[in-house]
Image 1 (tube, rainbow, N blue to C red):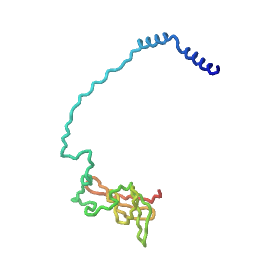
Image 2: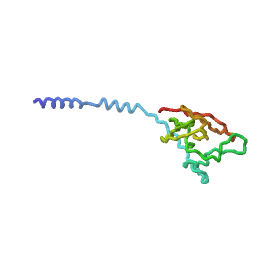
Image 3: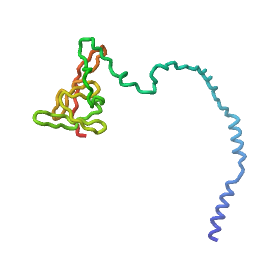
Image 4: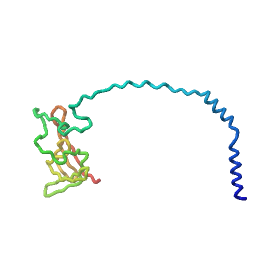
Length: 172
């Protein structure tokens, strides 16, 4: 008997949900009849114009340019400051100074070398006169706390100007 009581209550509850829905159906039909949705016309599709690419002899834009094409053109006919073209590039001249970190120093007698780390965690020992960075940066001074670098920056007229940069010891 106790089991039939909840079941009977449930049946009575369900029969209360079934009833006259004519007023609801009338409301829906009158609302649909009164409301007209305004959908604006689509804009006309622009006419496609075919473009023929005639750059067969030029470099593909999807292939990176070769190193020779991206290097600065140096005019040696001018009598002004120029980088040494005969000098062999150093191992750290392919890194921007932002990608290099000073990690410490080594010293022997009066010579102090800087320990410079690249972004791939390689550490190099550099002394005065060695080169690093993308702009022919030459190390001018090494102290316990920093490295002073003289870079050659193109001025746009075929000459180069010196810029003093520094790299400080970081403990990261």
